[in-house]
Length: 131
Image (cartoon, helix red, strand yellow):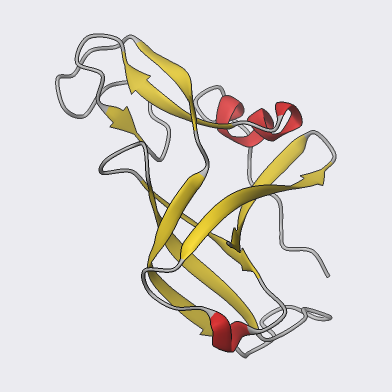
């Protein structure tokens, strides 16, 4: 069973739909180049209101993770892993996402990962696979 879909808003649209082009898009401030995630319309660093989506490489490392062994929804396949990912080319940006692996025992802090996308209608959910 698939996970519930996020609500797509004006602020989050580039993040949730960038996968259609194979791109992991995060927001960046036009004034100070601060990277912003989760997406916001105001830079938390300098309070500039001009933020734009930028394309990240989609590569990173696992900062932390958890293995879920409890089916909290009917027909949810368990176990599965969720990781907090430090993006390689976007210092300070972390993304929480499901980890694609058939062997949750292979998940380790510091492991290299790369983004993949799960197309669900007009939403492209970023997932990360071990590399």
